[in-house]
Image 1 (tube, one colour):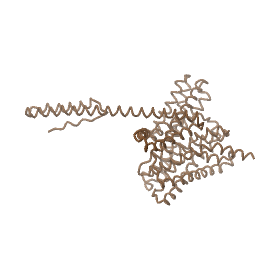
Image 2 (cartoon, helix red, strand yellow):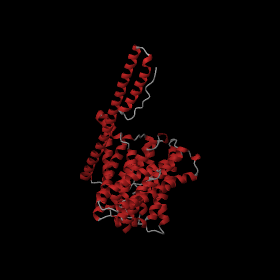
Image 3 (spheres, helix red, strand yellow):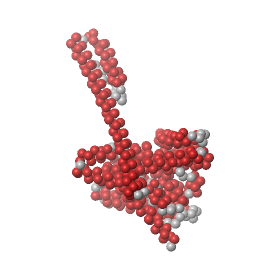
Image 4 (spheres, helix red, strand yellow):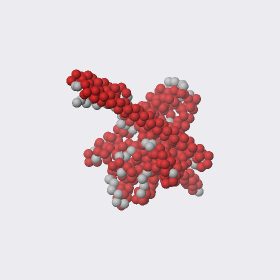
Length: 484
């Protein structure tokens, strides 16, 4: 007896299987002199049959790989086409802000799919499987987020940002920490009242993922309502930086939760936070300066646009490998490249192409993001208790947002000039978006992932649909009241 199944099946390659067969043949020749003719025939037959089996496995593996590739391509085509259809319907009929309109249509479609499972079971289940097979967390965190943050920051002027830097930094850091503490503490009490046993550190983890704001929808509405430039910059700047800070806070708390609070000191936690945040800021600055120096040495817009894409994709990948904040690096790199290029690094033609390219990327990715957010309703598990807790959490999040804005603004009002009703507008305009859902989906199953995903989804949908659709009229009423 001998064993020739020592070969490894790697990527279904034929040469690997042939290697296994070659080993078997060598073993056969070494012992053939010691076995009878009958034994020899049986053994050789076994070897031939083994080769056939291995080749069949190879063919099956290749077919599965091909099927998986085709399925991924079909999903990509499906979401692109659907986003185009929703964008057209919204622009032609609804005329809402694109992100809000697309998400509303996506939510409606999700509801119809769920109803359809009761009537047209095979067709509806096929569509639901297609939608739910999309890995939203990986798609956003490893693909879309870097492009969205860079696209948002490349249009921000560094000189204008410096004038508002103290307020933006305060809202994006102190504000996030205050919001995380309030939401985590109050939610822990609420869950305890409903006999839902969730550790305090896990409630803080949820608070960290729900605290960052998404200004995309609200800024488009406020611009049409005639918002002051300084307030617009505060909202955009705070959101870009608090996305990065919130991810760092989330990852820090997640590591503490997994290792154990009793096994980590304050120094360990502080070092972890500073490495992620500080490393991301420094790396982003160096990346932006390097990108600008390369761009300024040529004058060909196709190459310059390609360089910015390389900055985003390569820079984000390197940041992740270095275990520093990729989101913060993208924000800083975008500001540096955009500001310096507008000053002296680019010709008017190149600057125009670059600006329009990243505006288009921003619009397209946001359309896809908000559509996918609507379809996430298909994976959310809700029961009466979660529904009630979710509604209470919406109030908690709004209260925490108000406090986290009011404290920094009140502290800085004596040094800085804040617009009238800034606290109210920043509070109601603090929409939650895809980052919160993606972080919730990244949670391990043993940290109450299903519970937190459901609550997160309810908060995000409320903020985008209700707050997003009312922020324009809310701002106009406050402005009119201030004039009187």
